[in-house]
Length: 442
Image (cartoon, rainbow, N blue to C red):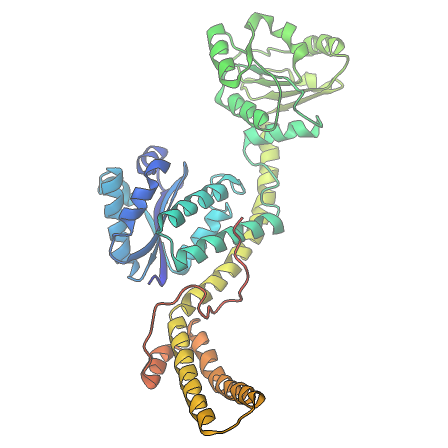
């Protein structure tokens, strides 16, 4: 039975994307891979967390971490067909408390490329479900993953870590909501085909933005890009004409001088009956004359503005991340206590069962020797003997449970010898030394 947690993997900090994609597990091959994982000596339970930013093997084990980690490395090399020497320098190995902390931090998005992003939690739930469906999850992984989900929920609800965007693109998209109450009736105009402007456009689409127009100096490029967004390509030379239809204008075109100045925007505002416009200037040199910002109902943000806003949000997230780390650490303490208690659970169960068997046997002998006992007398004797047994066992069982925290080393072994106990495998619910709080299955 698993008594420890071991995590072997790579992520965006330790390995380039070219290596991560070679190690990544497609959803279609996950079940077969999980089955192979459980064949590794010492791996009693297994799950795989595979996303664009990480590939991690999570194993419930009873062997020392070094022995298990070597088998997992061999597994990765064989199943993903990547030379071990290629990825081994990029691997990290966590076990015990460090593995628990890592799993909880990943679920809470504290180990993500963008701290606070919500996607990782959904991905972890899906991939743990795959392990549960494949039958490779057991007592330890079940508890570990569901506790990780609970940690993530606490972090989301008790901190503001997910409330502020930190990437320039997401900041730009979020700023539009400070100007427009809704985006579903707003039109976006992309000027140029820069990667950052495309990312902003995707963020805006995700937030429900309506139509997207695209213009580049090469019309064919505008056509191709517009097709990706389900938008409309427009000729570059007709930019001023189409500006009046745009509520949000994103500039990333290479140009030696400003493409849009105050005079043009003044004419556009008259045609729009002074409806607000939001300009996002992602180009260097800038596409939009800064003087545009002096006009009423016009808002212009350049890269410096966005970087400052992003930095402000990052600072807020860092402060919230400190609170989140405290939550993680407290939950790690609880899980470590529960995990340590697994070693004494079979002893506790066996001791209770042996004493109860003796009690019932002696009670039946005593009752058989007594004649014409009323049912209430029999019930009274049953309650009396049960109470005596519970009082006698209270201190020994309390000491055994403390052994799970490391306070009473080797006590369980001594109890097994003293009472000549035969142990059996127990489930996660057998006298579990935890507080009984329901798991988060959301």
